[in-house]
Amino acid sequence: MDTCLEPAVIENVTFDELAVGAEAHVRRTLFPDDILLFAHVSGDVNPAHLDPEYAAHSDFHEIIAHGMWGGSLISAVLGTRLPGPGTIYLGQSLRFRRPVRLGDALTVSVKCTSKDAERHRATFECRITDRLGRDVITGEADVVVPMTKVRRLRPSLPHVRLEP
Image (tube, rainbow, N blue to C red; front, top):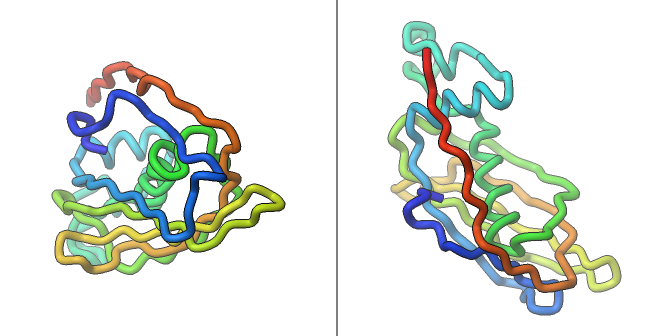
């Protein structure tokens, strides 16, 4: 999800193509702008994420990412990689195992653990690990998997500029 590494086309895996055990992974590093953009979009201005002085006296002693920033990375993998475009979220459970700090290099992984042929649904094990392979976030997602093939050019998003 580092934009320079993103494919120019996004394509799904249909329900019939999806195999139990199928996996997708992306790598992402947390930068200061990620925290600011997430705070702006979500409205979560908790000082643990934005105020270095406050964060220095917190349990983690420094600014940490919003937990749901990690959740949004899982959503991005499910919606753009596996199963991909057309996937509909039904539910998500997450456990936050470790804080994510500025500069942390993460691997975001999803793995299909079961399929429901009658309802075209699937369950995915979701995991985010740090560069040492330690779990940062773990969980499970339930989705409706598309029945038809979707292949599209990756949308070009507008440039965002942060100003104080």
